[in-house]
Image 1 (cartoon, rainbow, N blue to C red):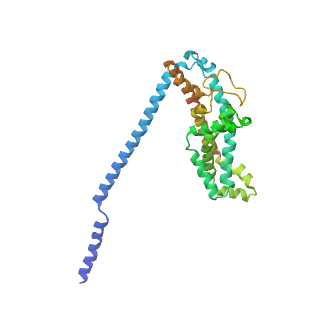
Image 2 (tube, rainbow, N blue to C red):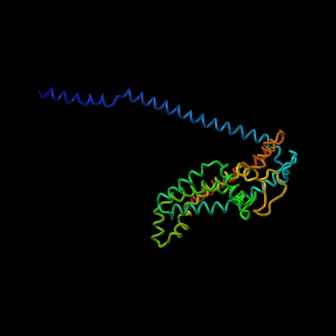
Image 3 (cartoon, one colour):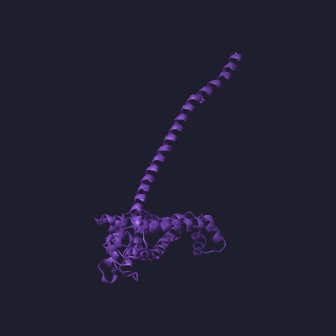
Length: 314
């Protein structure tokens, strides 16, 4: 009887091993997973390569068409009805005016709103509604902001004293509406990422709310804020639809002298050349696109540099 019991006990582990660990089943499943992972890897690589190839073809085509027009006269001449005489002087200077006007508006309103929502506002239903609304505004088409700018800033909502016409200030305010949601959301995320222990340490050393925000929170959040701001500004630089709706001229043979003057923007000049039937104007438009791409790449490079610089510092 005892021997039988011992034999039963000795056979139990082997039976359990057979049930619990099936080596062939494990190997088959492992091989299947490895094949699936390999397939997914090459599928995603193919998707990436398709995107890169299409982008490379577009860039090469644009460079081939527009490189011949990138002469000194192209940067010192106004727009013209003759392709060989057309230039981007007025459009380039007008774009610089527009960017210089947008920057202080969006920094003050965007970062200020983010500071209030993250540091001062109570966490209630109304605050959550505002945050959700701002996030939703980031996905609204630019045409809608163009219509808002036309009604509020260009026409002054029917009040003559408030009408700014199609000036630099009206365009800057319209573009600020377009990119403010992006800047606010990016600034909120950057401020939210600062650890609460840093704030508590500042309070423990005697700092008040504003001193903590100005000397501790904002310096630590600067990399994220700057990155979001410059990327949003890059979007504003390439937008055309809002400028068309508020009536920015496609051709203007004068330079602005104040923010209340009319101006010509680089995207509008490119749009005007691209829609003309002459084939040579398509090449001029390609040259304008190259200049716009270089400006955008420089702005993105500045964003990366500033982010890395302040990330190391703080």
